[in-house]
Image (cartoon, rainbow, N blue to C red; front, side):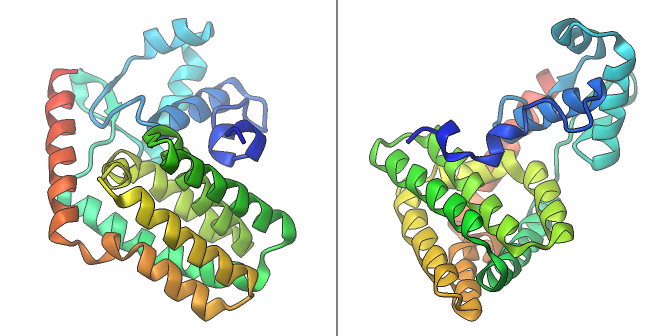
Length: 244
């Protein structure tokens, strides 16, 4: 199974926006690049270079960058221009704590409301995680992991919850990857995804919530190991942002 054959929504972030506008297309592409780690926190977003890359005028690029600023994904640094937002350690931990609570709520609701197509998306993403773990493929495991959590959120059929999770997922994506890449974490995640999935299939909302809580407790509790990896990533992004 390939990522595209699973119908993963992560991949669709880079597609042409639904409203067909140039600025929306640029926003979608930049969001995808931030999500996948192609653009790091602190990295410069050059209006002229983006216009040349997309072969469009600078007006829609300027509009797209303003939208990224409004959503908190980019910040203005005066004469230094716009850069991908870089969170402080406190902001990162606060965001992870909120995500943990929302993910658990999404699992609870998905157990009650998910349709067969939502479950199929979860199963497809889970299978990609399994295959990627067996191949020790961190990149595709990260894609499958994002897709699994997005499928659970979609299964909740709560669009406000989905939008908030998507917004926060984009903001913490560079830091969340440090957790996904930890030695042994892929195997643990696959087992825990399976528990969440089985609970949702059984329509057991409390079990699904508890299973997701166990899965994301590393985000909510801030273990010393988690903080070590997170601080290393934060410091690395800080150095790259200063030199970008």
